[in-house]
Image (cartoon, rainbow, N blue to C red; front, top):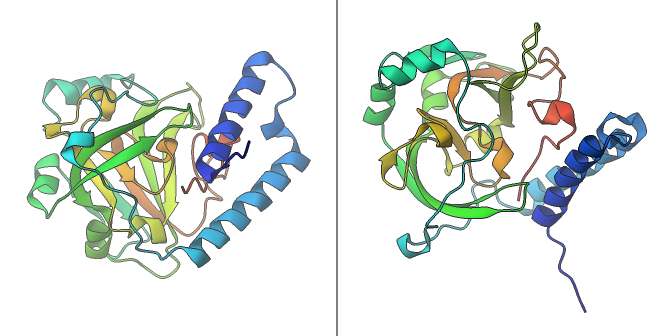
Length: 258
């Protein structure tokens, strides 16, 4: 019997394996320096290979209305803790603002109404979770590249870092705050959007209200929910674990392209 091993299956298996190791109390592979170095080398090779072989603007597969899943599970947090988020929920996110700063020429703050007035994109795509499930949904939002182009990239800009409202661990240094990042190649991809609707309705809390990232050529943990701020940076050196994301700081791959 012949088996086809795709990158998606390999990543799901790797991430699930890391989680299982942690839960069973065995030696955590993610904390083993030698193993981690090998994983990072493989990740770099995979990213460079995909970037070389796959055109930058190549689209992830899009589906029809008939393909939309009857149930779309929520990945990660289902509702952020904290009084600030609770207050925003009570007002229908009227007071919520998305801050865009860092290595940009024109830092801005945008309300949900501001975002909805901008040109939008709707796409029906498949969400692939590292836990092994998939679902197809129709997402509507603003192309991230459009907003970044308007803000203007300054010299040295390499990454877009997404800070979220959910705090998964209570830590003094803020390292428990959920965050993610992509490089500017993925940030400017035509299917990378800041989504405010799922299946024709405004996002509910479980799916990331009021705004979440959709970066369709990556696994689900890259699709950050509850967005509060986007910072353009030249490196991850000043960010907590220095790996570019909450789960990446805990052993997941930063490049989760599929």
